[in-house]
Length: 164
Image 1 (tube, rainbow, N blue to C red):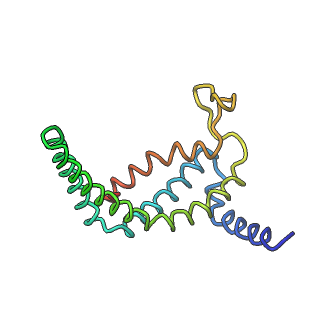
Image 2: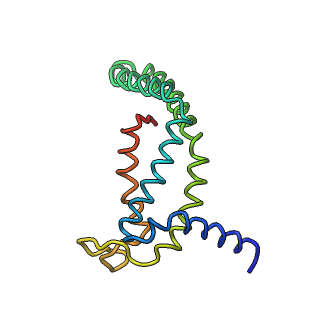
Image 3: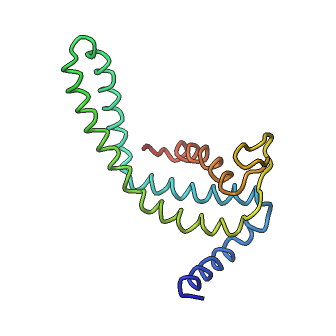
């Protein structure tokens, strides 16, 4: 066993111990709980690492520019290009602000998802249709995690007032 495997086994052992009460229950429910925890932590990163007031301001300005573009597009095509260029500057600024929480988010995902892959190895949830690519009626842990994370992200952002 090389050093990396030893570190990985130790790390997975810590997570297994820490989350033992969760992973000992039904896998479907376990993944719901783990996904909730992960998505909540990620949402907190976005809440506190992005200036929420500044992002709201930028979004409002972008909305104004979009309305202005619609208004002048037919009458003054050259002016609409200028307005669009200004709007793109704001959009770039918004994107730069959104990159800040991506690093801790990636770290969380890289630490948790591989461990989940070792814990949840079989089918997790039966779906009421035939899954085209796999030829089965079951979701594995990753598909189930993704399906859960989309609405959870929206719910947590709404609850915590997170703008992106």
